[in-house]
Amino acid sequence: LHSLELLAEDLDDKQKSAITQFLARCQDPAGGFSGGPGQLAHLAPTYAAINSLMIIGTKEAYTVINRSKLYEWLDSLRCPDGAFTMHKDGEIDIRGVYCALSVARLTNIYTRDLFLRTDEWLL
Figure 1 (cartoon, rainbow, N blue to C red):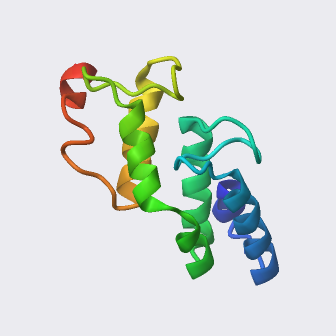
Figure 2 (cartoon, rainbow, N blue to C red):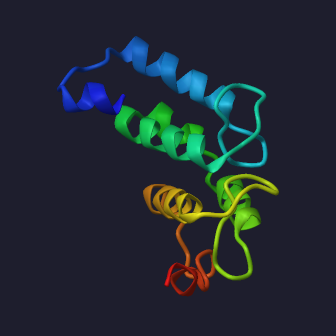
């Protein structure tokens, strides 16, 4: 979607709705998104899904996101030192912080508590 956006190519309403519905099926009940329906929720596809839904920009796209569950899921990936795992029991690296921070800001669920000590972990 981002490539199409950069090329100034518009999607019609039917295409936007179909993509939104697919992404809705990729949302895990716990809050994150996976790379496909029924797969493991992971910060990388969550980042991609949230950005895609923001690019689509319809009411349908915005309402797909279960913000309260997304917040809980992000909080479950947060480590005591401020880092984020990419998925439950997953690897820890800078991608986790970047994806979590971007998703939280885009969806207006950012709180200081959610990113407590993240700045220290980065440094």
